[in-house]
Amino acid sequence: MCLSIPSQVVELHNEEQAVTVETMGVKRKVSSHLMGEPLAIGDYVLIHIGFVMNKIDKADAEQSLALYQEIVDKIGHQEHS
Image (cartoon, rainbow, N blue to C red; front, top):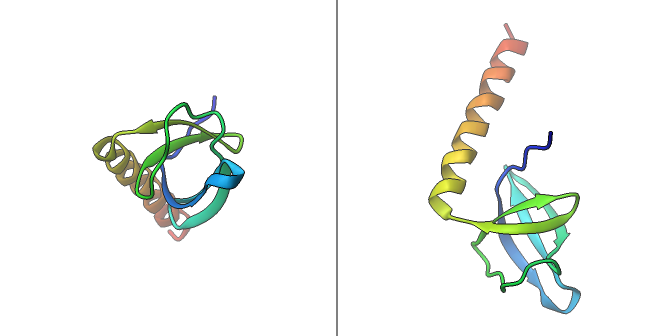
């Protein structure tokens, strides 16, 4: 099973059919050539093995990110206990 964490588009590389995304503070360049619609800075997307698979709603993305952050915080708290 693969969990995809929502990532926000922070830079466009149209000539390369790629975008730079930020995922919980980590930036990386991924391919956008599988997307049928154009992406814009600020869009939230789901990525699988280096490819943008689809764009998602901002509210859904922010809710998912909050839950992921809660999990990360809980795991970090358990490791320091």
